[in-house]
Amino acid sequence: MTHPSDPGPAPVLALRDVSKSFGAVRALRDVSLELRPGEVHALAGENGAGKSTLIKTLAGVHRPDTGRLLLDGAPAVFHGPRDARDAGIAVIYQEPTLFPDLSVTENIFVGRSPRRSLGRVDHKAAYEATAVLMRRLGVALDPERPARGLSIADQQIVEIAKALSFDARVLIMDEPTAALTGSEVARLFGVVRTLREQGAAVLFVSHRLEEIFGIGDRVTTLRDGARVASEPLSGITEDDLVRRMVGRDLDELYPKQDVRPGEVALSVRRLTREGVFTDVSFEVRRGEIVCLAGLVGAGRTEVARAVFGIDRPDAGDVEVEGRRLAGGAPSAAMAAGLALVPEDRRAQGLVMNMSIERNIGLTGLRTTVRAGFMDPAAERGRSRDWAVRLQVKYARIADAVATLSGGNQQKVVLAKWLATRPKVLIVDEPTRGIDVGTKAEVHRLLSQLAADGVAVLMISSDLPEVLGMADRVLVMHEGRLTAEIPRSAATEETVMAAATGRAAA
Image 1 (cartoon, helix red, strand yellow):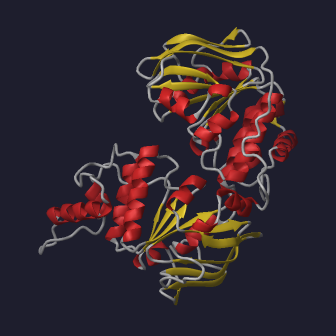
Image 2: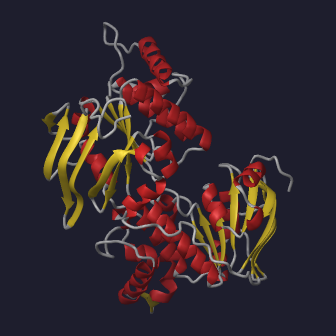
Image 3: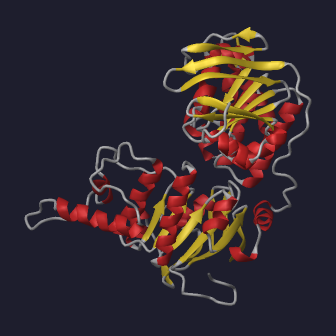
């Protein structure tokens, strides 16, 4: 580990006083960064802090307005991603982009397969080279297996192997664990440690503080486009890092208010979808936050979709304040006072090329249409009101929602549904992929909604979030509810026991 008194090896790649602007927005302000061989360097910061712009600058997507990029100590200019790749810099993104109908080997060597003397592809040499790469990574992945059907974790391994096949010396990993299970994260960390031992310089970007401290040697923190600190992780605590990220002490990450639950707002009785979940029954009362917990694939999201009417159940009933809903009818759910914030905000919660104000206004078209025509002033006023309430950070409300950071996109999804003034709010992984400061804001908002009498059903894979926010925890395992745990008895041990099928219902 590199310490301030020990400069360590010379950096492979460095930024010196780099600034980058997009119109009036200064994304990076005189940022310096050093990536050294044999070191995992974490990059931390809130959404909108400049992390993505920094990554794209290192990867050759953006060129700095001012400042320099140094490769092995010498000034370098990347005219595009190919220049960066040729210099030994590879980016592993959160969502891999493999060709599903090609094999693992073909994806690694696409467009540059080894050739025989007459120009024919040497399949044997390609497969053997892939096997060598997999052994180097310590992963047992069949070189001949098609990419279609591979887990996200295995797809990322293929992307890393592809980077190594280009002799990459710098690996930039952008939120690589966002869609992984605990065991997959552990395997990925094993690969990262192997790469570090082999002398690679790794830039690791994550919102999860426990991952930064678990895998990183050093950390650079960005805030509002500027570097706040670059330091060994051994010398700071999680609270120190949060303070650097948000510029203040985070008083409480889980600001759960004590609320006396009211009448039953949502009642689910024996809900079943064959092959997905079976005989699911529960209630959520006004003022209550009930968390649906369990391992990935347990059926939590599928239950939420059936409750909201996106998927039609084979059996069972859903009632809102005693009123039975028609199965498979989201319009009936909305009319009854249900709102659903989906897990995948980009694919299911937003229209990315549409404006911020239009996205917020989508759920309120009936209230902003006059004589069959949209009333732009009414829509803009409604959208601005909710954007202010949720403290959405944007340049212009007419900008495409795709221009916002992940945390602000999540706030827009919440604003869209809160504008309907729901009686029951279902939120699926409400803080996945957002920074710790925005996470605290979302938790505070959910707690306030419950205090105002909204019934909240929250789905979360984040155990600290479950324990910190839930009045009751409903745990699912393989499509069935295995436990209902009150807040006073909920611990990591009791929840995980039920999630793995070791607790009786």
